[in-house]
Length: 266
Image 1: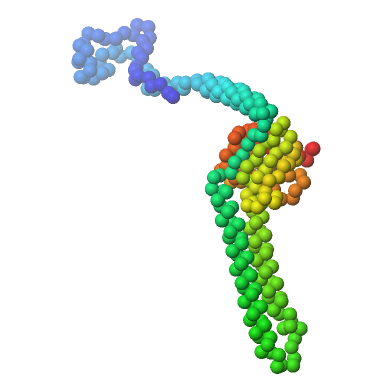
Image 2 (image 1 turned 90 degrees about the horizontal axis):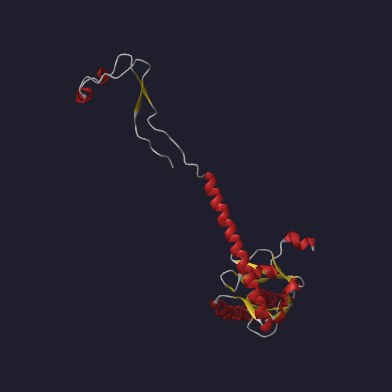
């Protein structure tokens, strides 16, 4: 900010120079202004404005650095308290550290139903194709020349339709199988229990050592709509939605977050 100085003139009188105050001051203001001065009097106008910037840069930087230091001190203290409380809870039993959104469970129910219905659709197509090819085959029995492809064409069509239905169904069932509903750390903190979105008991719940799980992006202040939790013994990753409920993202990062450089070094 800048301070505005008032406008003023300074009268510098050299030796033997003086003001002529014999005339009235009102006359000086209404008539010629120079008549109030002697001939040898010199008027030196000062700068109309004196710009004096406030020296607050150093003070501002000092305040910002102190605020940052206080924030780091408070965050480190709160993290220590969170870790302490987390360890105390682990001694008592299982601790849930992540829950998917509430609508995820209902979505996976409808997703399984859609996967089953689409397979029924492709199975009906295969059945219609088989009947059509059989009817056409009986009509061509009178002809002597029947190609090799025509003999096995019904089976080829049926197999292709069923393969498409199985392939789409497998992909649709794979998505909830790798989507995480809850993650819990078991007692003593050595094992993690992952419950996926599968609606059948086989493979729905898994127990994996915590040291074998890792994420490449942090849950705290991370980007993207999903977090991929990987296991060292599995090719496919588990998917967590960022919109889910993390009990404490910093604790989650302490458990699973590993940089690629750190992982390669290990």
